Length: 232
View 1 (cartoon, one colour):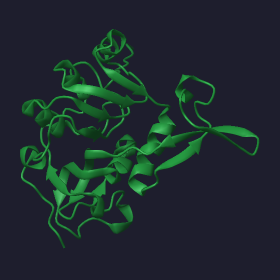
View 2: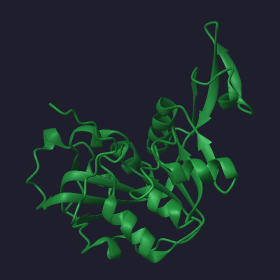
View 3: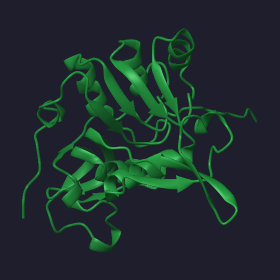
View 4: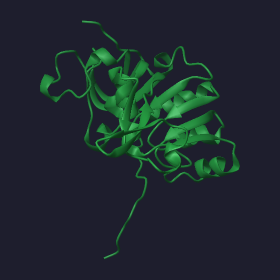
């Protein structure tokens, strides 16, 4: 069985170049590839197209890449809690394609499945549908949406083995599994890396066939995007 383990994020990101299209998994600040994002910052690659559900917050996650103006275009479903993302969007500094969340997820899944296009009713009759092909099926109008793929996909899992099999935990299963399948090169960082064969096959969410590089991450902050407290 192929051992796909690399030492660290530095080795995992070899081959990254400015101008590439990247997918970054996670949902809000949950399950994001923190170590890989830090390495992207260190490398200073620019003109990136980043596909992610959102851009985190100003001082964490993809927000750090936005602060350094390393991102040329964001393809996401909402601005989230990132004021810098909003500022760059409104000022025209950043190209942004906002996509309904379900459509974004399906476009990524289609990229991994090799499906170049599909039809969905989401967005028909709104700005989302401008310039897109529309067809009627059973008396209802649908928009044609194209797949999304990336040069590199960065995902974060709870546990993984040396063959690249991954298990996500809770909300981290949003976007990470489908992005793992849609990248030419998929880099997985995990909290715990175990020998091949140690994971229960029935619990694996991403088969190792989709993963090219895997490493055990470190110093995960796991921030909370919105903290609500109650004084009693």
